[in-house]
Each structure stands twice: as structure tokens, then as C-alpha cells.
Amino acid sequence: MNDDLAALTQQPWHWEWVPPVRPGEPAHEEWTEYLVGLFEEWTSEGLAAVRATWPADAGAEFPITSDMVGRDTARWLLERAGRLPTGARLAWGAAFVGDRPRWAPVPVVVDFRGPVAGDPNYLMHLVGARGMAGDAREPVVDYVTTSIGDGLRVFALCRSPEGAAYARVNAAMRLDVPPTGGAPGVGIDVMLTTLVFEMGLMALIGNGVEQLMHQIADECAPTDGGPALLGFVAATGGGPA
Image (tube, rainbow, N blue to C red; front, side, top):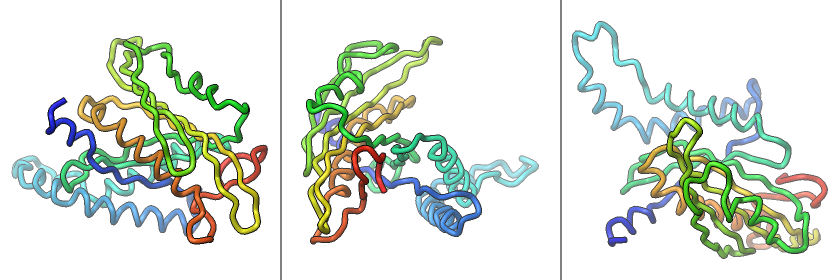
């Protein structure tokens, strides 16, 4: 891998959580407006360039606005998050090339669960470290060490029954969340899953998911004696609070 390609695959990502809000709640509108502002900042320049090439005789105004992009993105992410089972959350990312976002939103399902075995090697089977149906070739497995636990990331090129190419990225971590505020420490297994269908994004998604793994571990760990950004209930009670 040459230096330019290596640098491209190490581009920074922006990761956030889709909040557990419902339509009609104040938090729903607040988050939607936040995304509208974010995507206006990210897309205004590019949309302006495309708008400038819109034919004068098109018979209609340019149909896309940054406001529309942000609202549609918020709606799509909230609908996906609302279909997840208890204990799972939806993270979304933006891949940057240079100082501009190139792909967004990239969804990743993050499943938090209490450890079901003393040996975390069972996670290797769940993430398909030795392959899954649909894999076109043997997966690439990378091991990841975070601030409070270890994990692995699996990247595999796949092919659908119709012959379309895509990539799957599955990852898993066993985290040892330290005690805080008088509460005991807790072990938690975290699984991450996403599919990618664009060739350019395939080169970046592995590093992006690894950055998300580190971010999750850091958000699970208490800071400065205070509570962690991600709180957890007992192992039998589900996922993040």
C-alpha cells in the first residue's frame, strides 16, 4: 500500500448516536433541527455548485436544499433506530476526505449485551471471523485494543444472490467498565454491524468502525470521577441506560 492510499484509509470520522426520541417529543424536534444545521454546514457549498449548473430552461427550480437533506436524514435515522431491539442503538458516521465530509450518514448497529460466556472467544463466531454465507473471500480480521477492553474487527467482501458486490464489517469487544459512584464495575460485550455498498467507502469503513470502537470504550469509562457518557444496567437488564 503506497503512502497516499494509506493516508486515505486513515481519514478521520465523525460519530454520533441517534437519540431514543419519538415524534412529537421536544427532544425529537431539537435533534432534527441540530441535524438540519449540521448538514447545512456540510452540504451548502456542494449544493451551491450543483445549483449553479442547473439548466435555466429546466422549467423548475433546483429541487434539493440543505434543509431538506438534514430533515430527510433525521427521519431516516430515527426510523432505523426505532426498529432495533432492546439493548441495541444506532450510531451514524461521516467519513471525511481532507476537511470535508464525503460520505454521510453511515449507519452502524451497536448491540450492548451482558457477557454470556466467561471466554469471549464466542464473539469470533458471532462476527463471522471465519466467514459467513455470502462472503466472496476469506475475511480480514484485525484485533483492536481499547482503553477498557479488547476486541476484533472483521472485514469481508461479499456478493448478493443477484451478484451485487458489497462489504460487511462486523466487530466485537468485551469491555470491563470500571466502578463509579459506589456502583460496582460491569462487564459488557459490544457488537457492531454495518454493510457498505460503495467501493470508495469500502476503503475507509474498517478504520471508521475501529474509531467508533475506541469512542464507545471511552464513553463507557467514567471520567474525572463522574459517570460515564454511556451508562449500563446489570448484565441481565439490557444495554446502555
